[in-house]
Figure 1: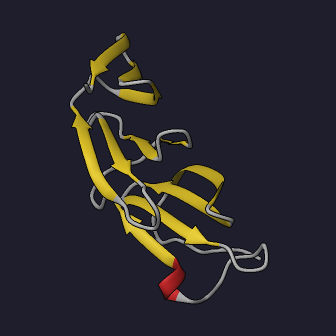
Figure 2: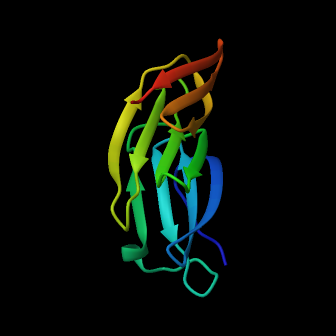
Length: 123
């Protein structure tokens, strides 16, 4: 099946979390998180959540060991969400140079930017 977006799609990421499958779609107006039903997209709007409204999401990464969702947003830096259980809350906003991608290592946020690597200690 397919899913239609009115925004330009910049990135796509699929994960399994808590025995559920999700597709995360980065657009030029935030990130959509869609719960898959029976391995397929659903028309149920209750199974789709939008976060990071107003941000262009170029890269998505889910840090399974820390339950953190990391969104790289170009000129707007990096948004990190705590995804404990079924709840998503903004954990930190890192104002970096143009952020292409980001990953966590322990309490260190590592951001690949236009100007090289930037490190943020979140401890």
